[in-house]
Length: 154
Image (cartoon, rainbow, N blue to C red; front, side):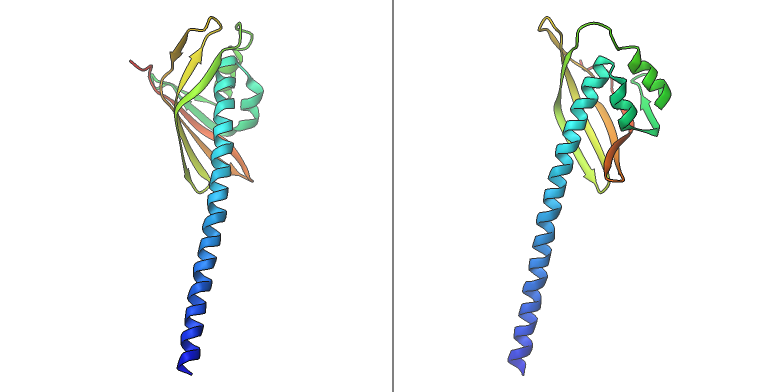
């Protein structure tokens, strides 16, 4: 009887460990997918921000979205979209990439931090100020709820 009880205990422990490991693998895959989605969203955000592509933001910002500028000015979603629209047709499209990209996940919330590197059509480039964007997953889709722009780097 003691032998059977010991075996059952060992099998239960092995089953619990397997269940834990399987869940860790799926959680890791899900986290990896989220990081890929947020990396892609971040790049689209940068391109759209710099080049005045309002349509992207109309689909990606929640109604309660706020942007905080380096001087402390806060824009609501409508004001932000007007700012982006003013950049449309402002000349040639600029290339932009995220340097020092850092994405932190907290369940259905993500914090994205980076420094943009902008390359002009003539090949010259400059770094923008560090920024922080906050996303939340709503009905399976990552949407931006807040953006904070830092000052220009030294």
